[in-house]
Image (cartoon, rainbow, N blue to C red):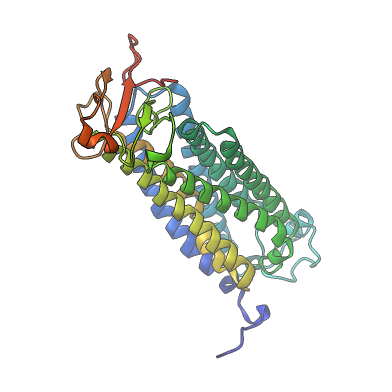
Length: 354
C-alpha cells in the first residue's frame, strides 16, 4: 500500500478544483431537478397559503444564487485567472502570510467561494425547521420539536462561522485548521436529519399513539390534515387510501432525510480524514438535496381539486367519515378515525382539528 502523498505533492488544481468540478456538476444536475420541482409546485398547488409560496420561492432564490456563485468561482479561478499568482489585492483582502506573487490563485478560496457554507447551512436549516413544524403537529411533543430546532440553528451558526474562517484562512490546505466549526456545522445538520427521519419514520406505526394528527393535506399547513385517532390495535386507519398516502409521504421523507444525513456525514468524514478536497464532491450539492427533499414532499400531494386517490398520490376525504364499531371477531384489529373538514368560502382542502 502506497503511503499518502503530502499536500505539497498535489498540484493546486488537484488539491481542490477537481473535486469542486465534480461537486458543481452534481449541484447543477440537482438544480435542474429543483427547477422542475418548483414549477410543478407553483402550477399544481396555486391554492397553498401565501407564506408557503414565499417560503418555497425564497429557498429557490437562495439555491439559484448558490449555483451562480459556485459557477462564478470556478470560472474565475480556472478561466479568467488560470495560471496567475496571488495579487496585491488578494494579499490585502485576505491578510495572508504569503507576499504577493508567492502562491498561485488556485491555492486559495475567495469571498465568492466563502458564500457556499453559509448558503448551504441556511437552506438546510430552513428545510429542517419546516420538518420540525411537521413533527410538532404529528407528535404534539414540544421537546422533540425543540431538539430539531436547536440542531438546525446550530447548523446555520456553524455554517456562518465556517464562511468567516474561509475568509480568514483562504488556502485550501489550511482548511483543516478550522475543523472545529466545520464539525459543529455538519454534525448538527446530520443530527437534525437523523432526528427528522427517525421521528417521522416512527409515525408509520400509529398503533402506539394516543390522539394524534396524521400527514395529509391542508392549505393552512400544506402537508398536514388533522385526524382524531382512537387506536385500539396494530392497524392504521382502516382506510386503504389513507394508509397508502401516509406511508408514501413518510417513506418519501425518510428516504430524502437519510440522503441528506448520509451526504453530510460523508462530507464531514472526508473533510477530517482526506488531505485533499474530496469532501467538496458531497459538500457542493448538499443544499440541493435539502431543497429537493422539501419539494418532493410538497409535490407528493394530490393536485388541488382532484378526486379521491387511487394510487397513493394524494387523498381527498369527505367532510366527515368514520368507521363504525367493529364486530366481535374484529374488535382487536380495528381503529376508529374521525376526520373533519373546515368549510370556508374560498379555501379547499382540510384544516387542522385539534
